[in-house]
Image (cartoon, rainbow, N blue to C red):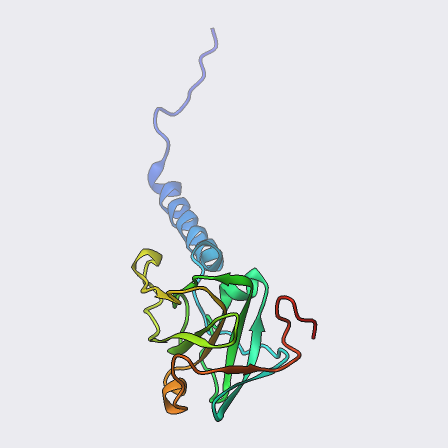
Length: 183
């Protein structure tokens, strides 16, 4: 019978320590490269160059971007690190409904005016920005309280400075696509 000699133990001290360190180093590098896909961070985004439309309330006016699609409405002004004076965003919906907004991933404080189908402001809120790590269940909600067709977001304090109040009539650029109106 041929007897083979096998070591009873592997030489652990020679190869395991470097192998463990190599595996850990590779894991750390892969994690560092992939961390943004595993845990996306909210980074300020440059202001996109979109078409601008005029919205007038009393003696004030704002040049606004439109949020018409669900994707545009979901993002809104989130992830932007600035909103110049005289600028804003108008959310346009298909039909009037009670709206609720929040400030998830929004880096700048905003004023919001909810506008009914007849073109009158029905509710105004000033919305401070929330910490980025705020859980969605802990975000403050801002409601129109009654059915509205549009929501106008502008820099915080802009509506008050312009003397805008609930009940004011809003004049929209005729090129803004509204339900039942062709631009």
